[in-house]
Image (cartoon, rainbow, N blue to C red; front, side, top):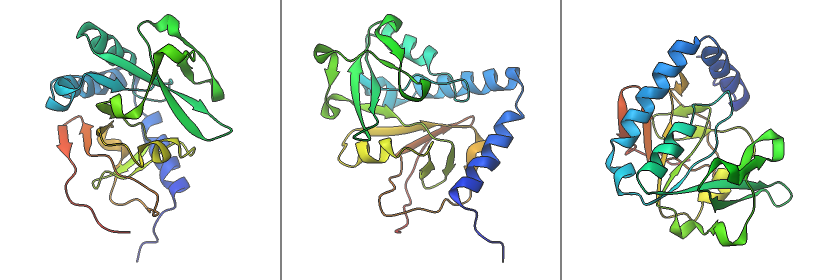
Length: 196
C-alpha cells in the first residue's frame, strides 16, 4: 500500500512540477485559464469579484483585474492582518491603490471608504497550490481563506493547471472546498463531497 503524502510533501511535489514549466508554457496556461473564467456564467453574473494580486510563482491575475475593470465590475483585493490572522477586502480602481504588504504580498492600501464586506462579494478567486477533484486545496499555509470563507455565501472558484491536481488531499474539519475549479480543460463544478 502506498503511504499517503503529507500536505508539505504534496506542496513540494507540485512546486517541482510547476518549476519545470517554460515561460511560454506558463503564459499559454494562463491564457486558457483566463479565457475559461471570463466566458463562464460565474464570472458574467458576478458584479463584485474578490481576487488576490498574484506573485511570480502564481498564475497571473493582473489581466483578470484589468478585464473586470473593463467590464465595469468592482475589484476587491484582500489585505492580511497577521496578528488576527484575518483578511479584509478593499475595492481598488487602479493599481496605484496597492502597496507591498505582509510577506512582500501586493495588497490594497487600507481605506475605510473602500472597505468591502464579504456579503457584497459575489465571486472569490481562491488561490492554492495543490487541489483534488473534490475542490479541496492546499494553500500557502496561512489559513486566511479557510477562516474568511467559513461564513461566506457567494461563489468560490480556483484557477489551476492539471499539474496541480492530485488524487486526494488530507483534509481536516476546518478545511473548505471551492465550488468550481478551472483548468486548461475548462470550468468544472465540484459536486461530490466526501465527509471528513
